[in-house]
Length: 302
Image (cartoon, rainbow, N blue to C red; front, top):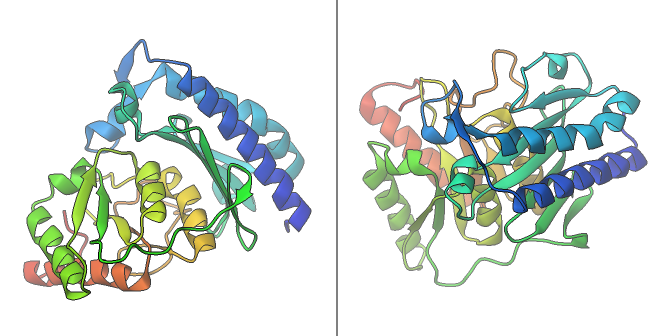
């Protein structure tokens, strides 16, 4: 199946409507019950609420017409992976409430994320709604990006300002945290800026959005052996936005993100880098490789 420009616009419009309706619902709701689910090693990957599930229902209701009309697969965080993503030419990759932990803690940092991804793992459409600030980013591969329906591109890098490192708690708890931040800080000083600063607390989707909005900035996760490191739905829409913005969305080695892997949905096997410049992304890769060499292994590290 090939997607025409009109197909892409119609599908993007459907995703925007689904994300907006879900975002409106989330903004008007508060979780009554917080539950735990299996998978991943962090609290952020395990917490779930009835709001996650209802948001998913809203999204799937809106997208059902597109699924039928275009024979699309569906991968959504709170659904069983039925394998349709591996059989259809394209599939919806849905995170109905990314950043559930900041949501239940009543602080910003959560979002609705919907992407259309090809069977080869290429994000074709990316839609992200921030319910707190009522914003909607939409990107179509080769078609640019909008913010609340208006053409948008990232601002120019701030002069004489250090790199903003957007991170979740896994980086704060990483055994090489101090070494990694010092290395990024050194890179910032070498370029004449004021050093790196770490900003914690958002989910993966909002960390990526804040990175794109705040150059020079980055968000990354190192590979690790245990399950976790985010899932396909955490990065698909963001990757589309970054591509259309001319920014960097890769695995830790600088290769394309594996957004439709056959053996599971976790991304711990390759890590991720979102960065506002090639040079900054290369610096993160270098830091990771230096750490791997010091441990005497090329396997994914903790």
